[in-house]
Image 1 (spheres, one colour):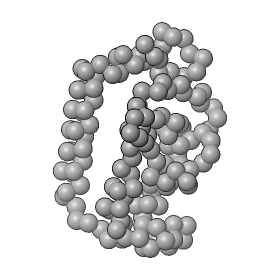
Image 2 (cartoon, one colour; image 1 turned 90 degrees about the vertical axis):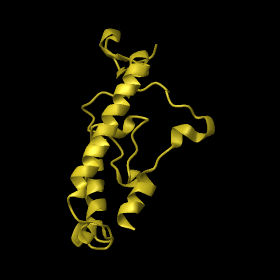
Image 3 (cartoon, one colour; image 1 turned 135 degrees about the vertical axis):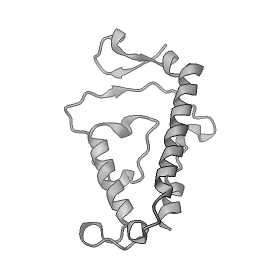
Length: 137
């Protein structure tokens, strides 16, 4: 029973993988994610597409050559990287090559167990590139 926790934290203060990977937990998580995605799509559908936001090459200054969306994603991901978001094996940045090399340093490292299978490359599944292309191309 592996523990997802900060390093050097008492065993009693960690989340057990058996709890996270139980059918009830997975079902609850999938239902919550489905509701979040559907709600976000409904909210987004009320606005028309804005070519200035999604069109490449529309940015001036610091983000030249990018769409406004890409510019915002890079900035948001840089901030999230500093607080360890992309140390999780389940999190993938859209622009990993543009991220800072290290977190803020004040947060302890997290110890993630190997939960994802590497059979057939299952642990490498990442649809970010396809998703981004749907918006900006």
